[in-house]
Length: 599
Image (cartoon, rainbow, N blue to C red; front, top):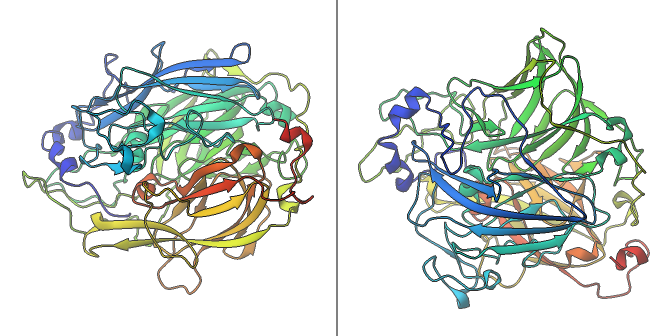
């Protein structure tokens, strides 16, 4: 939604925050539960937790902290005290992740949700005071419930692995165990983990709860990057304090602030973070847009001149690895557009000594409302009748992220890619682009308002053509659609709303075939893709055509597809798909090989 949706429980916290906002206050205390770096700090790598002897065992606590602006932060803290560690595993490794929910129901800040619950199993309803003994049993999903989604990994959609609709981890003294093995044929690249409790995922991700997962071996997929220094950069968005009651509206104000590896880049000064590199050194960057709602379109400028970066992978899939095209390719691009949840891994040629270098995000227009024009929609007032200037909460203006400075003695990045080793074998299944789909479906994004004058009444929908539009119902036991393991389908997804949406599906990747009815040849698979907004009058809706892959035996079960703008997902823009076991002897076009069947 392009309008402010912060209701009274948000605004009431703002009466005492204006002073801090005016000063550009930044929290730096090391005693904070979910600490943030000082504005303008040097960007350091997230801490690494690496598998040993084929096993990575991680103990994480899920915590919250209300900052001086009244905004709630959320974080994953490891047993060693590390915040949001990067989990590094090899194909075939076992991950054992014990998550302890330490949220305190007595603490609530400005991005907490109202005291309501989404019941995902009416026969097992509960609150945080009456905790279910079994997190797999469903119950009332409240603002204090959580779970973890291992975004992009092809692992079973079952409890204790990657089930996110009915798995509810409540505040408790007991930790919940996630245990699964990384597939031996897992694609090397960047993935990530984040909370996925329906209705409350936006608040938790906006609060900073996210971390990277690296499946090692990308140098085996592209030998050109072997030995390069490796840098992990995570972009996050976060809520901003509302404007002072009598402040003059600022049409350039963004909807959300951004940070890079927890170094804030706050409005209005946009003091950039600092990335230190060795002069003229080539590096391999892994970038995750872990934003809840914000699109980024990254570019590098050296002395004002736009630079090209060499893309090696998107969404964890190296170019040429899964699409039948030649290996060891680098696509040189002038910018990298990432929707929320998108990842890109690319080569950067570092600046020479004395060159002024900047990492920026370009303006991203996500709807027909001009990014230079603030909304004039009505906004609810708190009990204290605090007036708040309405703002466009999707406005994404251009802004710097970091300055890149040269330092021959810098210790960053802390690691480099190894020598390439043996090349990764070709996929056992036929290349997705060559498989004939068993059927074609059409879906569409749309929005409805219970009260057209009140933006807080929005309902977000994703609907299969021919069915009745309905917001996602977490208590429903039947899936929205069913397929069989072994199927390949083509999905057309239209956007019939006037704001951009980011389509994502769990457990699998897809190939983009067409954009707006025009064939495209993209040499990579994706798990999240942008669908442009409708302008309100063009007869043809913006659309994408995707080839969906349900051939993997490991994804039998039920899992979601949704818009990854979490504001929209929370508002109902989600559905479920059930992959049933193959109902007949698979045809040659999509039969699993004996090797895959044995895994």
